Image (cartoon, rainbow, N blue to C red):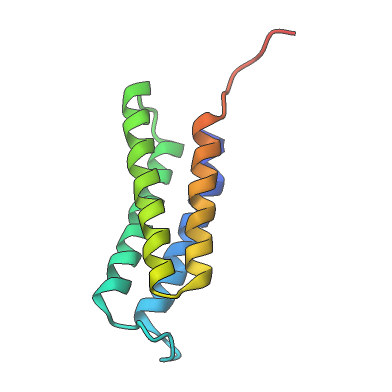
Length: 115
């Protein structure tokens, strides 16, 4: 288990919840409820969440992990941009946090270091 992917996973999961609120609009005042753009942002957040879960839980090789990291980073960054343009500030902040968390998870090195 790669624990360094936990923060991006949680932030992307928060993005899924905020995207669902924006799309379904339970209070009816999001301004983007029911629009295709909000649906695509919700799908992007779900893709970033699933990618972070796969990177965290599944044992994959270094090349596959590199490719997966690129795809997760792309999904999270584009979803943050879409949420910004949809004027969903907290959604955009959550997905931008997931991007930062992914960069830290990607550059974090596991293992022991020489003393």
